[in-house]
Length: 325
Image (cartoon, rainbow, N blue to C red; front, side, top):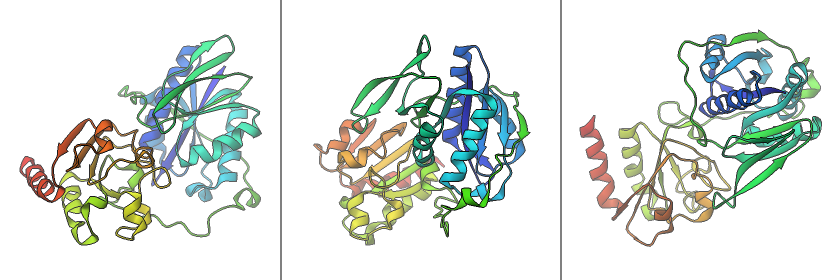
């Protein structure tokens, strides 16, 4: 039983979430007594792909087709399926990301594979079946799901597993062609617009995020969010009510109907913490909540909380961060 790991790449680098997925896949392979092969989607340098050896990957398949730079559902699905067939993979592991959600269901049909999404733990093998634990109800509950059949697809939730780092180990990078045609790119986007923040960091990939809600009282006060973000080297985000009233652009909206983030630090300023917002941030490693209402629901999800007015707390917090250097 071989394992294929899907690694997402952007601007020549492997995404952080894919380092976690690679580590997950290599541990599944070790459990099964086999090796893990990766297939890269997007554009990456050979040197960065080779570093996946540190996460336990033995070989990386890379199709250098330039049109794979941007996500195209049909082309990505065909590429991954072709790699799975080449490697005779019976387990395919990918990130529970926008790309993973899009191609996962297609792959399930194409490969006649069972599929589990939002998985938070390594599987438990029971004969030819796997039992995996997945998050449900925006992380409020967990369910055990049994994957059966000859092929299984596992979409791993961000920040649910620590990325391995075995320094000095490298993977072999092998040129691979999925024989993609123009028809495979028929659903390609006409234009891709990327919004950079925090020195070129895209919000979904940001290591730190400072987010504001209606408690900021208006766009004229948003400099307080931006000042703290600049001091921390963080990206800025907002709640849905803020983007709904056009205080901030929609691409900064974090939540169930917006962007999902999984930073090491998520700072929520003046956000009450509706379940729809929590669904977009509950993979964060550390959540800090600043709110003057001690009964705000967000405090239940917080690792650290400050009960206070954001207009008093934020300037002092920003100054303290600057003094720490």
